[in-house]
Image 1 (cartoon, helix red, strand yellow):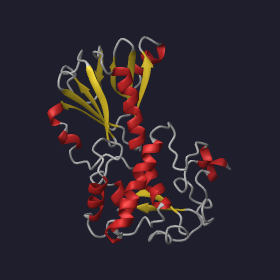
Image 2: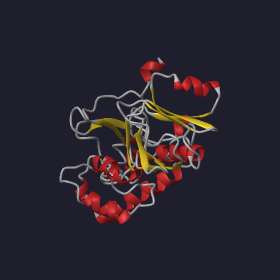
Image 3: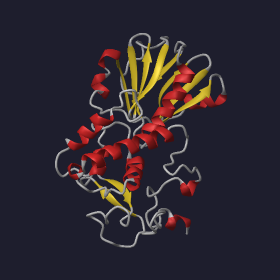
Image 4: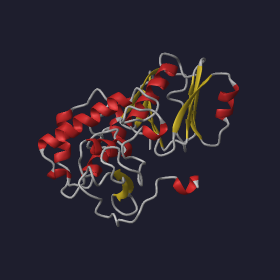
Length: 285
C-alpha cells in the first residue's frame, strides 16, 4: 500500500497540474456520486492527509480518495493520445482535468465527494500526519503510550489513529534502525525509546518524500534500498543474521513484517524457525 511519502509526492504533482484552473473535465466512476458540485469549479489545492488525498474545490466541495493497495494517480498532457486512452481504461475510477492536464485515478480504493466542512467524517479520526503541518511528536508519543495493553509497537505504528502515513515499509525500517523488537508491547517502551522512535520515523520519511523511490538506507539501487523490508532469507546488513518475515496482527487481517532477530532481540512469537528463502527466489529459478 502506498505510504505517506508516496501520497505526499502524488499530492504535490496533482496540485501542480490542477490548482488555480477550473476543472473542465470531471468524471467520477464510483457508484452514484454526483459530479455536479465540482464540475467546472476551480481546484484550489490538492493536499495529502496521511495516506488520503483531498482535492479541494472553490465550490466548497472536496474529492477524497485513498489508493489502498493498488491505486494510483497518473498525469497526462490534455489532448494527447495517452490521456484519451486513459479515459477508456476499465480500471479508471476518477478523472479531473483542465485545458493543460488530465489526471487519471486508477484502481482507487476509496472515493467520496463531500462538502469541505464534512472532511472530518473521512479523515478526522487520523492521528498527526508524519509529513503534515499538524505533526506533533509529543502527541504521537502520548498516543503510543495510550495503546491498549498487548498492542505490539509495530501494530501501534501502523495504526493510523496513532499517527497517519506510516505503512509496513517505514515501520519495519524504523524499528530495525532503533533496534526494537516489532512484537514488543508498545506500553513497555520507555518514554525515551518512544520519543527517539517517533523522531526517527519523522526524519526518515521527511528525507524519503523527496525521492520517487522509497529508500531508508539513502541508496536508490534496487537491492540496497532497505535494511530489512523485503529482505527475508538474506543476511542483515548490520550483523549478518538472516532477516525473517512473520505475520503481524489477527488472523485474516494480518500483514507480513520484516525484522532481524540478531539486531532486534529475537524472532517473532509466531516464527517457527523454518528456513526462509529470499523473496522471489523461486521465481528467479
